[in-house]
Length: 165
Figure 1 (cartoon, rainbow, N blue to C red):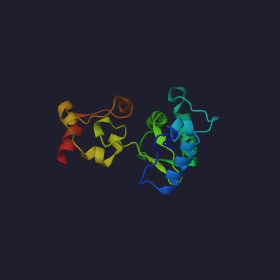
Figure 2: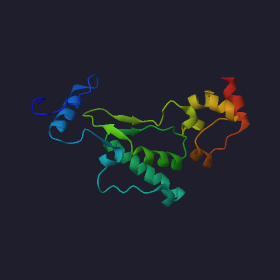
Figure 3: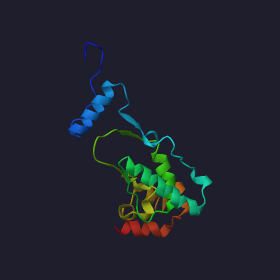
Figure 4: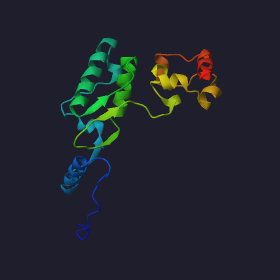
């Protein structure tokens, strides 16, 4: 293969042999081994913009998208208390993220990057509500992304609570 000009195959040791074999076969056939989550959805799947949906419609669209992703072995594990519109907006953003194709198992989309001040789930997350960051101290309140402000407003009391932990 090397003499023919091929690069090394895309084997990710320590994942699992079935996924390695799947990626190797796809690589040999010239097919993608990685792709955007959106590309895995069926071609006829209609993703609607959150701005075009009423509050009544957003929950149905969120459920529809979660079910479609489950068929592809992607589990959406956001915080249960998260407002449906906020969950939908962030799930739509994740559709642009790239993932490796795997043979078995599941991808878990929990939305957590480990950086609480930038997390859309922070006000609903135990870790986010008990972790005080430099950004919080500098701002004088619990910091979270602007998109969350449609649902929760920061307060100076939130810093006092964070400082207790």
